[in-house]
Image (cartoon, rainbow, N blue to C red; front, side, top):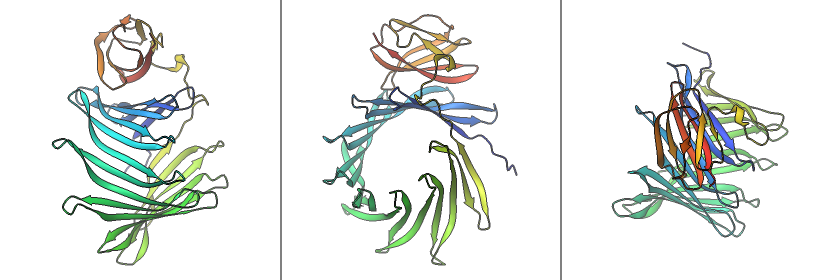
Length: 343
């Protein structure tokens, strides 16, 4: 049995000049080739106030190794600027089709007190209720109790499903949460989370237990140890699971932070598109002939080039102003870069 740490996944995060997350790339480890392979690209788009307007996920398909839009999330806000709706859409037949909708209800203190989820019935073309959450906030606006209901289409009524009770430390951090299931007309323990913090209120331990009905007691399940940087961000976590005798290592995550601006120098990017922002054409500084695919802000494929020659002029006259994503596929694998069409 191999007891060494082995690569599994890698995530890269990109930020704009205002430190807002502008996109992410998710990689999976290919053990055969001993390399990380780009599998999912996330692009974040913001409104003039800097709030998230939409998120588009583009996923690699096999065996073609092409990136195809998969999911789009649209964010809606109320007059106070609070999150009002989340609309999820799936990509099908070259368009995004609604799949689920979440709406939020707030009290006079702008604390969430209700959350409704529905799914889109394609045949009937209506939103069908699926679940709702009723939240009871404390004096600080933090949730004390969340009750989740599932909608019964047979009875056309809401049925209790789970209840989560929160406790907080003096600094307002969650110290515990207990989840119960509604079984046989009463609430019964299901799982709990216990959190520990250091003197700077950084999370250092998260323990998850499950309820054992036979012995009427909590049993170890998993725990996660966190170490933190000098600037109070997570440096590493190690998750373990309980095998009824001892704690066994399960997963380890290591965090690497960039300069405060979150921006990389052009010389650090590979490949490089220039000029960026662009005008009527762009060029890619890459090491070998490659296949290119350009996607617009909606995740739609707007251009494809097979066997592109490095640094060859690529016309962008047909593209509207906005943000675009280029995927570059060659013998080194698949990489993605972003550029802005400015004029």
